[in-house]
Image (cartoon, rainbow, N blue to C red):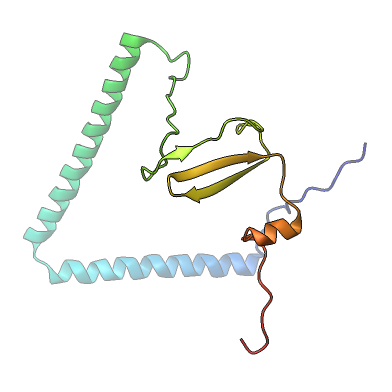
Length: 157
């Protein structure tokens, strides 16, 4: 058996000049960031700075406390119920679609869970799913309004 070449190319490492250039851009960005904050600190009062620092500290403490409370809550559930051993059973109701329209699955024909093609048709009663063994011939698909077939363009249109 022959080894195929990898479709992914290895990461490219920038040359030394480019790395120095990128480092200078990063340093200039941080210098600009610090300069702008220096301007802000000289335009506001020390009371506003203290309020902002207190607000950030309280927010950080609150976030940490809420995270710890959530982790403690989950730990209590684990201690009470034990580890998960299986996925919870879900009841699937396909009688209506996501917007509430009725959905019908006609009896007979190929099984809709294994059919290679399923036609979704709009009727007066809602959506209808028709399983099929395959795609229709090209002429029939065009008559049904095949969305993948683009109509020919007219000159000057």
